[in-house]
Length: 182
Figure 1 (tube, helix red, strand yellow):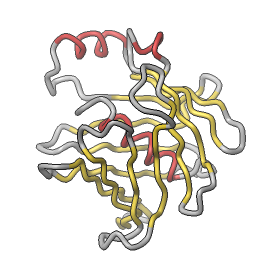
Figure 2 (cartoon, one colour; figure 1 turned 60 degrees about the vertical axis):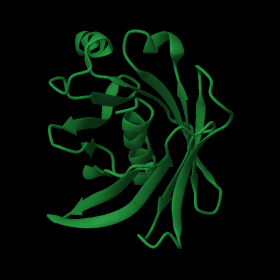
Figure 3 (cartoon, helix red, strand yellow; figure 1 turned 90 degrees about the horizontal axis):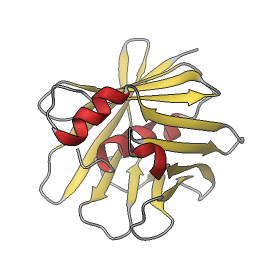
Figure 4 (tube, helix red, strand yellow; figure 1 turned 180 degrees about the vertical axis):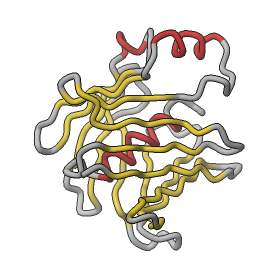
């Protein structure tokens, strides 16, 4: 059964903050809050289960400091690895591409939906071309991530398989904003 998430950016001067919202039977449910420090040498984004930051829901962190083919681990609050995400530098020259391996061994590809929009966005970063990503499982669309045209960044995530961990889907959505310096 499909499900939907929405990632809403909060504007703050020192860090990127996001609210991760889930939708169930037409009602919104806050699933977590994410924070990313700007200009960090080693990327780490923590998703909190509450706004008071007393309970961690999950994290996404780089294995090493700045690199072209960065690898990120998405981990549960107890440290269990939910997935790894690695930037595919060669494919990303045309359109941003990430390889995602889930804990159950699924090999997924997350990439910008259209090459021509990706190429234009590289030369002219204007909001006319909303960032759009597809998460592919053996060539079939597992999830879509679409940036909404609003004052602050809002990403709509549509997942086609409810077995796909919402934490991994949320982390991939944050990566599209945070790692592309949106």
